[in-house]
Length: 187
Image 1: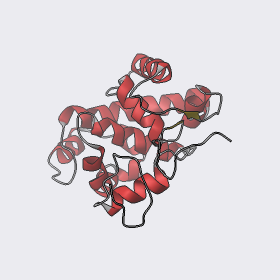
Image 2 (image 1 turned 90 degrees about the horizontal axis):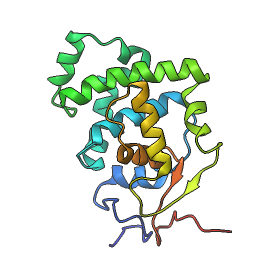
Image 3 (image 1 turned 90 degrees about the vertical axis):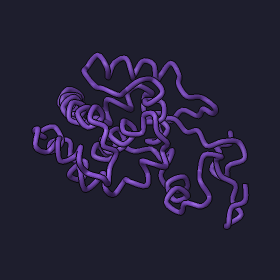
């Protein structure tokens, strides 16, 4: 694959989409410790289920506007009127089940914050604060266990594959491919 800047990237990044290149180069795999961003990425990964990440990425700003800047307190308070407005918003993915799951997941997210002091404390305790380096996987024992725990707490659309993608996106798991200019190399 040819890249305009000559840098080699992971095969999933679309060289014709500047938004995708920026996401690959500057965001994917970078450790996230801010709860608001962790919530944002969780919601976006939920909407990505069964679709391409590029589809979600291209609608990211519309999602941010539609979901009140990904404020979990605002999202968990959504009533039927807001849910119907979201379902009729042509700028986002209008899957009724995923929209309702966002509200449920916001409530659980806030419960986890109360229990652990922050969502990031909950999330990063799974690896004792360490970044894991893995390639070529779509699930792992970590994503299996985290998925199981989130489901037990009541979250929806948090299967092991979605959670693995989430962990990659927020930098708990670093997975840039062999040959990518961002590939992790042992020192």
